[in-house]
Length: 292
Image (cartoon, rainbow, N blue to C red):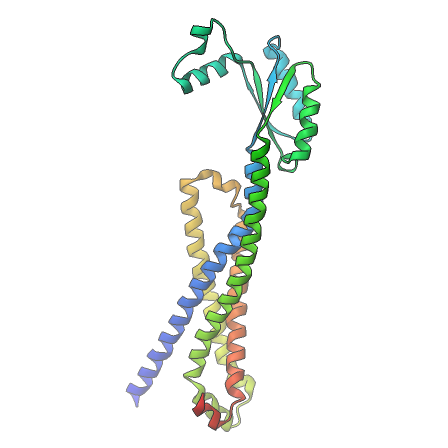
């Protein structure tokens, strides 16, 4: 009898461990998708704010004039960051890139002083760039404004497609996750279907019968969510180590929301699956239990 009880406990323990592992893996996948969806907006802003608008200045523009223009532009609503590149600095950078000094055979410095303007994400689109470029070219010190218009359009279009794909993937993964966890919970409850029927025969209420299964489901959901959050956090920390700029995309707010989603989904899905599975066997008669 003792051996039988020990075997039953071991089997029950293995079922709980299997459920916990499967739920953890599902929550990790869901967390990755949730993290991707939540960071899509930050990624869009990061890409847009790192696109550069080059403002070319006249040859007569002095360093003081350029700095004065920078201060004026900083007060404009679209300006996020401005870097001044002098003629000498431009010549040095191009000489290093080409491996030769163009001024040696031209007899002059062919480059002009420029301002490297980075826009706020709300203004990094075609319509805003058109009126920003017109406003800048009206200034006496500015000769031309250059930016990659096609690149801007492609970035906006691709980010919209990525966001849509991630949203569809999140919905599909939520359905698949529920199915996987539901089947695992159902197998665990199935192994104890005769115990459930026996308790029902001796007059136990449905609430009393359901309570241990729902309690175990809650514990499994909490443990699985905690493990999933720890693994996801470890992955993000590793990413931070190799790519420090990722802190601008995966912010602490995104991490908090992702963790809350993982915990909420982990608890809800195990509670719901346990409740539904136990009710299914509670409604069955003795003959139906043997056929199931």
